[in-house]
Length: 92
Image (cartoon, rainbow, N blue to C red):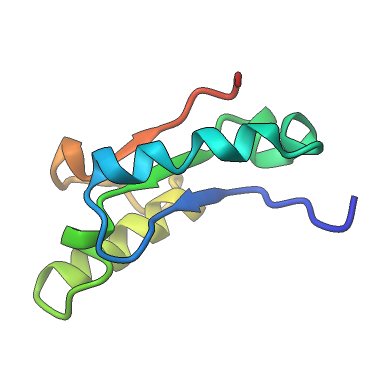
């Protein structure tokens, strides 16, 4: 395996959460999907990029905190909206 992500964040530019969720399913067909540490550890997330990542505004700070929470949840708690992201099921 040439790559082994510990955290996988799906956040297509300008997409709301429901749109981003549609882009996760095609990833399951990747041959190494189940072997990825992120999948095995339940650390695959879809994000409302339109609200938190892609637009330069005050929520960009929230988006940075959200990314930090995904990478180091033991140090950064997420106190924002519950609909900002969804943890993905590891099964195809």
